Length: 432
Image (tube, rainbow, N blue to C red):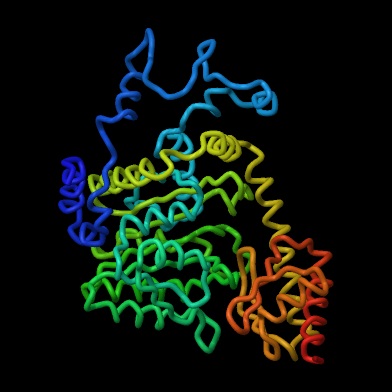
C-alpha cells in the first residue's frame, strides 16, 4: 500500500476506528498524491515568479489563452475564473460560501463538527464517491422501496453491494422508521451498513415531519448502539423545496456527533436547489468530531476525484458562486419557490377534488419536484405507453401500480388538463 494511503489510514484510525472499518478496500487504498504534477504545479504557482512552466494550460498576455468566440459571450467574467483548471476540491471561496449557506439553512449544524464541502460533478458523482470509499462487494446498502433508480447502478452494479429495501410508507402513510430499523438491525452479523436518506423523496415528493425525523434518527442510533457501523448518506438533491409542514432541515445536522459508529455524509448541490441542472455543481460533506479524521477523508475524496474526473468544471463553479453572492439571489430564489409551491398545491387540490378517486390514490407529497399516483385499475406501464402514444403525454411508470408525475415542469394553468388526460387514458384502457 502506498505510504500516503497508510498515513491517511492511521489518521482515520486514531480519529475513529469505526470509520476506518467503514472504508472499502478502495477507500483504504486511495490517497491524493503529494508529490505529483498537481502539488508541484501548486508550489510553482506560489513561488515561480519569473516563468511557470508546470501547468497544462496555455497562457497568453499574462492570462489564460482563450477564443474570442467563447469569451465574447462570457464577458461578465474574468478569463482566470473560467478557463484554468479548478482545484480538485473546488473553488475555495465557493466551498466556504456553500458551508455558510448550510449553517444558515440548518440551525441543527450550529456548534457541530463537520468538514468543508468538497465540490463534485453534481450529486450522482457525490454518491459515486460514497460508493467507492465505503462499499465493497457484499456490503449492505439500505434505502426505501420507492427510490431513484440510479442507486441500483451506483451501489449495486458498480460496487456489487447487497441492496436492502424496506417499504417507504407505513399503513398510515408516514415514514416507515420501524422498517428502516429492522433492516439495519438485521445487519448485526455484518457489523456495517450504508443508509441512504433522500428527502424530498424522488419519486414521491415526500418529506417526513419532525416526529418522523426523530424516529429516523433514533432508528439509526439504535443500530449504532447494537455495534453496527452506519454510513448515513443524506441525498439532499431537492433540499429547500418544502411546501408544507415537514422537516425543513437536512437530517445531516441531527446525525452529526450522534454516535462514534455513525458517519454522516451530506450530498447536495446547486443542481436542483438553484435550478442549474446542466451546471453539474454538487458537494459532499463529512461530519466527524476529529479534525485529522475529516482531513484524511477529504484527502481520500480528492484521490477519488483525481482518479476519475480530475476536477470539476471551473465555469459552472464561478457561475454558482456569483449567484450565491448576488444581492438578488434570495429574492429570485423565493420567486421560483413560490411558483413550485403553487404547482404542488394545485396538484393536491385537483387530486382531492374527487374527480379521479375511482381510478387512483396518491402517495403523500409535500415537497420537491414529483408526486406519485397509485393506480387501482390499470398497469402503470400500459398507461404510460397509452398516454404518450395517444395524447403526447410523458410520465414515468414505476413497478406495476405507480406513475410518477413531475409537476415541476408543468405550468400551473396546464395541470388540470394534464390530470384530466391521464384520467381519460385510464378510462380508455378500462374500456378495452
